[in-house]
Amino acid sequence: MSQAAAAPLDLTALDAWMARTVPGYAGPLSAEKFAGGQSNPTFRLTTPGDAYVLRRKPPGTLLKSAHAVDREFRVQHALAGTAVPVARMVALCEDEDVIGSMFYVMEHVEARHFDDPRTPELSREERAAVFDAMNATVAAIHMVDLGAVGLADYGRPGNYFARQLGRWSTQYRASETRHIADMEALIAWLEANLPEDDGRRTLVHGDFRLDNLLFHRSRPEVKAVLDWELSTLGHPFADLAAILMQWRLEPGTTGRGLAGVDRAAAGIPTDTAFVEAYCARTGIDAVPHLNVYLAFCFFRMAGILQGIEKRRIDGNASNPQRAAAAGALVPLYAAMGLEAACHG
Image (cartoon, helix red, strand yellow):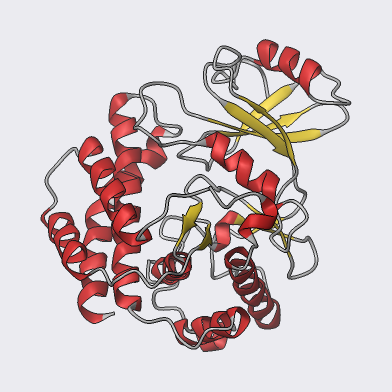
């Protein structure tokens, strides 16, 4: 890709930084922006002998505590060598003068990527194995020894759901562009119905779903978990509920859901089977209050999408067309959150 086509990146400055920072680096350098990465723009960097991936904060005025690429770098670096598969971190640049915002570079992982959880390219048996690998991976995240990997201070203490509800309510208010009655009702319901803190505290990914995983080219094996921007220490059931939330959405590359799909015929586990497999792997008996956690996940995703819409309006969205589509989904997520709250 030409430098003009990769306009968000100053390739001259980036090439100079890579040359003095990355062992074995040799240009010239080209860059191609991935279509995804709505929150933190993501680029494939290519040289004659190697390939990398760059994740950066978007330009412009940003919401406080959002787009924490330094946290993404830290957690993935800490997880190297654990049961959680991650890409190898190459270098973090906190100097915003290099390309205009903080960024990090990681290895480019050669792998398969499934954008649609229906995975039509797989056989029934392959599909079942992929979903089981997904289950094993989220369980592995929640069983990481935080002290051993240096992440014991990666999140604040206290009730994770109450803290997240407060944070995302604030973020939503800061990016609100219109009144959505269902969103107001959902926030009020969550404030009144969050369960007491049960003391569970693990690493949580924050946006765990099939399209944030990279798989081995020929085996049902996760090679890397991507997009750690929302990771923190918190309640593991938030990740589990987020998976089930996604599956309630419409199929296709927008909703990336499984609504209406005959899961038995497809080899995809039911919600109940997926939860039971997770419980067996993590050594717990059950997941109580699942309807509350599902409602919370719909609420948080609505807040995230609203932030993307606000960046589009402000003129600094990573992909304006996709951002507009994301913003249009906010009322739907709010309504589905209320439905989950009332009916599970």
